[in-house]
Amino acid sequence: MIAIENISKRFKTTGGASHLALSGIELSVSEGEFVSIIGPSGCGKSTLLYIVGGFVEASEGVVRVDGVPVSGPGPDRGPVFQEFALFAWKTVLQNVAYGVRLKGRSRAEAEARAFELLRMVGLERFASFYPKELSGGMKQRVAIARTLAYDPGILLMDEPFGALDARTRSHLQRDLLRIWEEDRKTVLFVTHGVDEAVFLSDRVVVMGAGPGRIVDIVTIELERPRERAELVLDRRYQEYVARIEGMIDAVEAGAA
Image: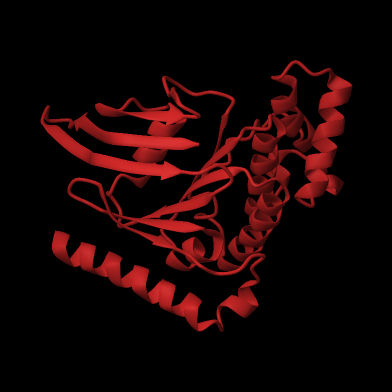
């Protein structure tokens, strides 16, 4: 579904020098696959995600979605970022209904769909609340529901749980897997958490820096559905986490 072909990205620094942020990235993501991208800070994980989303233009190479080159943002790719980006002046229901209205649906249809999605993320009781009245975890649930509202085939998630406390993050990881199991959207997920990547993913892409490149791709052969309480006791899960952490440690040591 996503074909990333020889993607490189150069930026101009404030001093006018050219900085190579990404070099020769090659990656294919199948329809319905959950793929996480992980690596040290500065390796270009988010930049790669923004290129797939059409928010940043590659310096070289092309990204194709269903065979069509990406030339900008589109409704087939739904972003969910760490910054909740909710409309402060709209209620929870109105925030979620906004995505449906963009598809030309009536207000009644949009609100019905929004209520359905709020039930999915466990927030139907908060439909009349405003974002400032919600916790961080609740805001992120609303952001996910709003993205799902216009039914993109692909979710692009840039550390969506990174700003949350460990308990809330764990709950949202579980909720995301439950939602993903229902319709199996294609997910490209950027994270710093190795345990999070292993828990969620079909494959984990490990990146190195200087410039950003793919070091390895690890296939996670753990049965679904997954329960964290069971997985943390599973030796295979522990081995995946240790293996990927070892790769990142080696990358950071080499870059030091």
